[in-house]
Length: 222
Image (tube, rainbow, N blue to C red; front, side, top):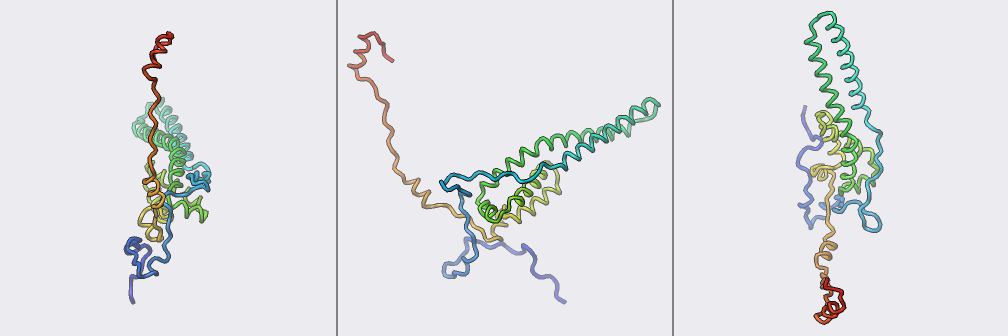
């Protein structure tokens, strides 16, 4: 019985630069994305949509659990000290719990700001034209959450972020698999580059006669 076969994302992704002009079918199916990204009707860059997710309660719950564990350990240590028992092992556990609290405090403090910053950055990408068209706001937000948690040290979240990156076409390989290519407004860029430069008028200066009049009038010379 034959084994193997085609796999998802197997083989090299399509190359938009290798399209053959004599074969129209090669160009079919490719979606061109504007390099300047999403724009408003007046040509200005469109603002990022409203962040759609609630605050992440996972990190906050972990922090509260770690704090409760540390408080319990502290009480047990205090009781054992009164009895004269050895508390070395419990003190090590307390140190680990306190270290966990410090890490989680930092992560909770950083998460919201990093999510909003990455969210605004992503909606400037050319791919955002597709995300907006297909109403993928929550999918993009989920990628942002996994990516930020990965940056804050969670390796499992980093792996999840890579999968979302493929689904959304964030990375170049995923863009090629989706048959997306970015195009630049070459006509607009060429027009801006060849626009005539208007000379800047030199500031007006007083003539020698005008300066003499000012001195005679007691006005001084600026």
